[in-house]
Each structure stands twice: as structure tokens, then as C-alpha cells.
Length: 548
Ligand code: AMP
Image 1 (cartoon, rainbow, N blue to C red):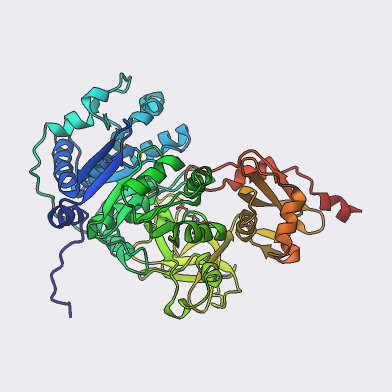
Image 2: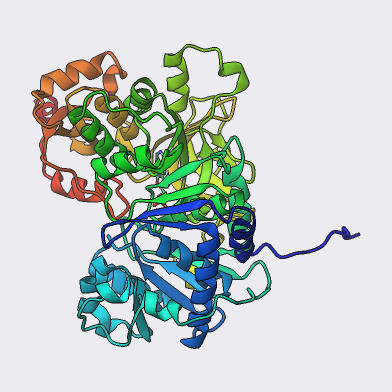
């Protein structure tokens, strides 16, 4: 027997309609690419998204067509999120930090019909425009006054284009499983693969983000979205914020500590989200400006890479802000877990609480999690056993776009995340490594992430990466590669001494090397493949002892 409730499809257009109607005067703030701060509202975004929808129709974009963006976090990009998906087209957010040949590859692979581009990225597209086989036109995201001279063919100016259209448009209704947006993963090997979200998965994910034990965003929040709109839907915030009417603050291309700090203060930001690297920049700025206060900031969501314990502590001690450590991936829309203390943990002392927050948190409702061994056998949830982390749920992909990579889920829909993790009896998950990065010493696994986190606690260490280096006796031993903090005097022995009391003896890195900078992927993660390549002939000091 079927239930008798209305089968209203869950569509992205309903989010902006709701925000425009019930939170019409809530502000959307942008540090524009052109420079000044721009102030808009949900009502205005709602109107302009409809103008854009009319423009897209006039340009001949058809149901299911892909529309690309190469853009920063701005009000215009936000409008495009709704104008494109709301019309039944597929929003393809391209990561402009990818190598130019990867950008060319994914625009061709996605078969984008139209590409929206920020002023900053026009030169990038000019260099490959003639190789973009399906693109029929480009829209430069600026006004007439700032339009650049360009060799791009069939160019439109965003403001002129939408300014010519009516703001009357009825969002179409269609099956909620229709594709809504496309985001390519920044895989460290091979070509990027497309994750194709649906309207249904996106709306369900928005409910998940709004839940109190996930991010708990509400209409009382002012949210600084530092995580890019081109990276995994900015962790779902552009949709979740509209669902609850939260104020949004977009930093544009100015992601430096000073600008982030100004936005946090001036826009009374209560909640922000971003990868650890961004917060390191904020901390550097705070170091140069002693006594800096962020009185409104209550929660900071950190994910994308492990949030170091020292970072969680500093947010608590210096700014009175609580870190919500989250884990997920592009393939998961992207949120999988979020770190909140359980009621029974509320009375623990702060150091113990921070230890708990340094784990990646517990599964959000809607995300199935388990860890398995190499044979696929489920491992115990005892906080000790670590294995391959598997996930399933309505916001998790079952196949990459155009079937790239073949079958990626098992018969029961479990998807292998490629992460290695532990799960404890309370359901707290802790990532110990990427399966490809795990260090195998004498057959036992050493967690490179744990070592990196501990090393980051040293006051002279700005950034740390641990890789396995070949060893004659142990097959592999850890090598710690460090970027020093500006002006810090740190030696190899200082770091090793610091780690001695913090990690198991056999985990201690066999050597510490100092470098000026570490390689990163387009989404800011450590690029360990490059690091392993750089150090492939590195001879550990312990290697000769073993050989003797
Ligand atoms: P992406 O799809 O680019 O967002 O990358 C997803 C991957 O980033 C995950 O599979 C993890 O390896 C890593 N990741 C994301 N969040 C965290 C976290 N909180 N701690 C450790 N690794 C993380």
C-alpha cells in the first residue's frame, strides 16, 4: 500500500523561492572581484536568478544541458547556482585551480554549452577556447563598465545579459531525480571524474546540513563561506542557507587573512567554513595583530583535510569559537560526519573535549558508515581496528558521470571512500590515512595524518607532511617534511624531541627535512604523490644503520 501524502518533487528552485519569500531582506554580502563590497538580499537573488533563467532560455540552453562556471564565491555565482539548476539545466562548477589541460578536459567531458567566467579567469579560458568543442558562448561575470577586451568568441556581459530580461519566470516542475549539478573530483591520479548530483540528493543534503548535530545553520546565522562554490557545492551551504534563511557572506577572490578577518568582524559572522590552510592564514594575520578579537564567531566548520588539534584549541582559547570537525567527499554531496560532543561528554575538561573534537565526528543521519578489512569483512567499532571506510546513502554517488571508472559501489551500494579510519563504540570516526598514503613499517600501519597533526602542535611548525620512504629493514619508514613558521628557529632534533612524548616510539619519523613549501592539489590538500616523487631517492639516516 502506498502512502497517501503528496509526492511533491524536491527541487532546488523551492529553496530560493522559500528564501526570497520568507527571508527576502536577509543580506547576501560579497567582496566583489572588481573590489568593493556588494550588498544584496535573498529577494534580489531570487529576482535575478529568474532574469538569468529567462536569459539562458533565450540563449538556447535546453533541459539537461550543462552550464559551466569558473568563478569565485560571489553573489553572481550564487545566482547562477539557482538560475541554472532551477531551470532544469546542470550547473558544472569548474575548479579554476586545476591545470589548464585538466580544465579543458573536464569542460569537454561535461560538454558544457555555455561557460560563466569571472574576470580573473578570462585569460585562462582564452588560452584554450579553441579546444572547447561544445561551448557556444561565454558570459563574463561583471558589468559593462568592467568588461575586458577579450579574444573569447561569442561573449556576453553578465549584467547586460540579465538586465535585459524580465524577472517573471515560473520555475519548471520535473522529476526530483533529475541531474542538478556536476562537480569533478580533484583526484591526485588520472583524469578528474564527474559526480552528478540530483535535485533530490541536494535538497535532502540541505536538510542534513541544517540539522543541529551537523552544522545547525539557522536564520540567526551570518555565514562566511570560505570553502569555494567550485568545491563540492561549498559543502552544501548555498542550498542549506537558503533553506533556513541564513545571511551569507562571500569573500570573492580575497582569501587572505586580513580580508577574511575584516569580513568576520564587519559582517558579524557567527559561522564559517573552510579547509585548514585558510585558518592558518587567519592565524598568521592574528599573530601580526595581537589582541585581535572575533566576538561574533561561534562555530567554525573545518574539513577537507584533518583539522589539527592545535587549530581547534586556538579557536577555542583565542577566539571563543567551537570547531565542528567535518569529513566528507565530493562523492558524498559532500558531508558524511560532523564532530559534536555527546551529552555525556559535556562535563569533560576542555583538553579531553578537544581530543574528541580532533576526530572527524559521527555519521550524520542519512550516511551509512562501516570499516572493513582487505577482504571486505566488517571490523569492530572499538576505536582501535582500522580499515577501509565504506559509505552509502541517498546523497552518495552510485556512478561517475558517463560511467568513468566503471562499477564503483558493491551489490549493497557501499562505496569505498579510499580513506582508512577507526570507528569507536560511540560512533566517532577518525581518519588515519588515505589508503594510498598509509605507511607500512614491518607490516604494521603508521598513520601519516596522526604524525602530521602532532608535528603541527610544535610552535615553530607551519605545515607538515609525512610520507613513507623505502627502508632496507622495515620496507618503509616515515619521513617528516616541514615548512617552518616565518622567523622560527627549529631543528630536526627539536621536532623529534617534541614528538617523542606524543607518539609511539616506532612511529617516530626516521628523519625531518625542512622545505620552503609543500605541494598541494587544486583543492588545497597535500599532494603526496608529488612529495613521494620528490623524495623517491631519499636515503634515511637509519637506512645505513640497518644495512650494516
Ligand atoms: P574532496 O572530494 O576533494 O572533498 O576530498 C575528499 C577527501 O578529503 C576525503 O576522502 C578525505 O581523504 C579528505 N578529507 C575530507 N575531510 C577530511 C577530514 N576532516 N579529515 C581528514 N581528511 C579529510
